Length: 139
Image (tube, rainbow, N blue to C red; front, side, top):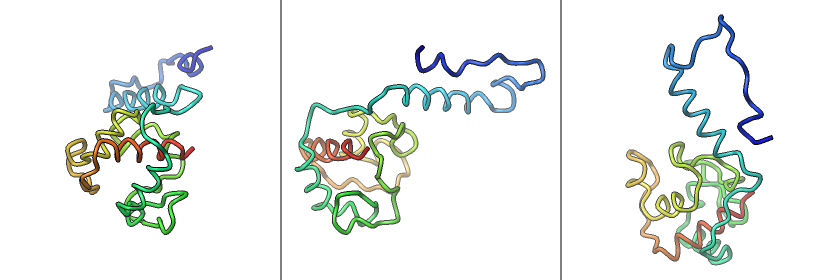
């Protein structure tokens, strides 16, 4: 049985329908999260080198804001901890955790999510690809 097929349930007459009371937005978010988490394995990028990515993450001092497994001294508390990043459904709470979205996010976070606290660090395309490859090893 498919992922989505395992969560069906009939609506009884006493339940509130999703479009009542602002529930439509919650239903849409739940469906996005459900679909994003359906696969057995997180996305595996076909770009970048995880070991170079570890070096990029250390060089740009991402650990000043994030806790990052495998990065010496990465004990930040400003941004979210990145343990298990590959299994997350969303990036920054709004972007699907997909390689193309992660690359865009790493290159220019404020252009992807208005008001984010994460700065644009000036990563090159190669550096973003390498950093993304490392982040996808964090299962």
